[in-house]
Image 1 (tube, rainbow, N blue to C red):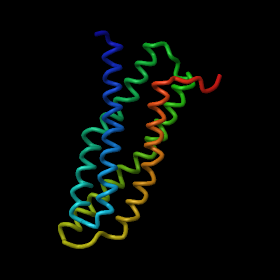
Image 2: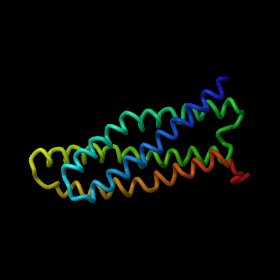
Image 3: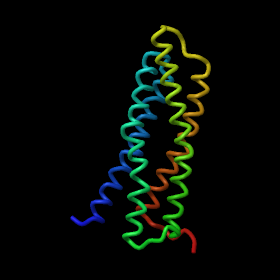
Image 4: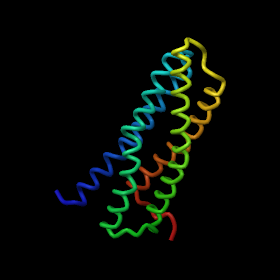
Length: 158
């Protein structure tokens, strides 16, 4: 197997980890937040933070590195329309994701504290959860669009 194929495999695997972990953890926290169970919210929020630390963050770092190396090896300038659009969408997703990380950490801490005290969640939790959710939508759509652009490589502009 040559270097290009190994890097392509790493790039594809890291994209699956990035989007799959992001979607899966968002799914569980979305529904835990609607469960009415502080204990469930505490456990799921803690695990979402852990999943982002162990899987999403490393994959998010590997993606642009392997992508740019692959583009260079294939002879595609970064100004190639589908590639430039993908990079722009990746930046958009990252700009949504960074505050999401902070919100998740805060939500996990609030939920753990409330569960330990046997009390309800503070009002900030619901506000943070709304922001967390609304920042996730454009990030997820951006990542799905990047998948399309990577596979179809459409001529977007000239």
